[in-house]
Length: 284
Image (cartoon, rainbow, N blue to C red; front, top):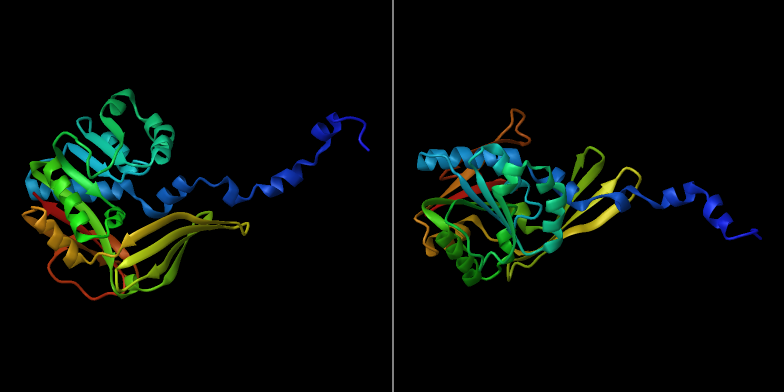
């Protein structure tokens, strides 16, 4: 028997404790998400160039709806000294994470041009915006057509007279299937899990999992309870909400024809690929 309780504090084997700390246990799910899913620079390149092409001037005010970690909003204020960004999200936990990990790295001037709001995108009141974003299919949380139209109408009202609403969507035959897709990244595996799809209602349940080299796994790091909206439906509802025009932007292929090349061009027809991702620009 140990002579004193001090023995417990000084003689435990640290290796026993360390073994319990798997990579999954130490992982930051928000950092993993950003590394797996987001490329704020490439996204803003597209938005910047497309807005200038459509409206003949640079965008200044940008609102990122469902902003999460606000990586796009923070990158926007870093892009040009005049840029102003607003991030809107209902989740206080992710906004607090952004304040620590994203906003803290901004200069004082950049911080003054960024606002994060814990609010509902259906009811938030903001200054007129040049650009509003709803990326990563976030607006699919609105499962009924009337609810989606209400959101689109709220965005329409929030835009300047020549403002543009940018969205993304995905589709193709694979979008309607139960499946798992894996992508190897440095230090971990990203797993996209389409867990269920109901063809009667369009309900789509998806998860993101992460797996690590030590065999540990961060299961259901994120879960999405969506409706799978098709591109024609989205464009119809945008028109119903008052947008004068919506333009679909399609990605080209790399030289091997295996992956998207990152370049999105406006199209009126496209191939019936099994899986695709598109941007939409909706003009007020």
